[in-house]
Amino acid sequence: MTGNSVPTLFEFGEDYIEPIFAKRNPAMILFTDEKDTKYQTAFAAAASNLKGKILFSHSGVSAGIQERLGEFIGVTKKDLPTLRIIAPEASIAKYVWEGAIADLTPEAVAKFYQDFKDGKLVAHRKSEPIPEKNDGPVKILVGKNYEEIVNDKTKDVFVKFYAPWCGHCKTLAPKWEELGEHVKGSNVVFAKFDATLNEVEGVEVKGYPTLKFYPADDKKGMTYEDGREIEDIKKWLAKTSKAYQAHFAEEKKAEL
Image 1: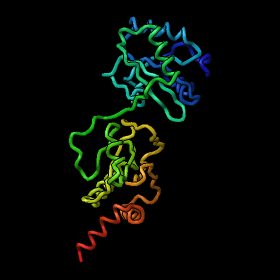
Image 2: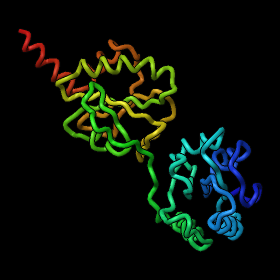
Image 3: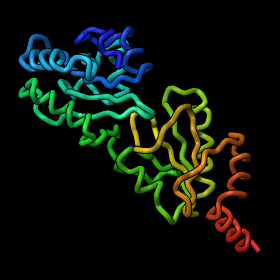
Image 4: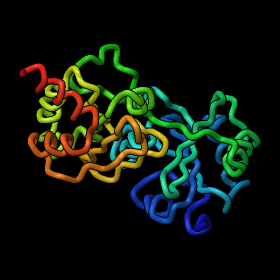
């Protein structure tokens, strides 16, 4: 680890993106907007005790790169103060210290680090609340309902992983709604997942929009890479989705 090339405890900023994310060093980050508290003193002492084992940083969430860090990890102003570990390896795992920050001690920080090192911690996944109503043509997926909807073995599920700021995602949105209406009454589900606010273990999204199809009989899924016009997707489903084929075969029979 390159822990010796950065300060023992640093305020997160542009200069520390590389030591953590590019060089894939785990970091313990205290998110707070307070100063000179007992828990900050304890955190600083722990940073000194554990120097070279894990990077130690503190950050707010209100502006600039710190705000983006908060969004990425899933920390908002209402969560402050909070202590997290991020482990930017193949996929970035995030862990939450569950204790009361006011009771933080150097020993508690050391135990948090040791539990992380020993693989005893369960990764924290971001999720929006499950929507109260979810009966539109496109199902809304969040971290907390993803498994239930996508892994339904009676349904073929087509998921759009998107970011709200992505121009291509905005262009695709009305087409996705139209396709959802098109398959109404079938065992094909069109769904959307805001990958900036939600995470699911084992699902990595590297570009937006990413389209993945999860057939009823194979929930490993496949990435859709054909055209993104409505007719392109209909033709692909007619070749690929058994549920789509069955539904429209029945519809044709009904028309005879």
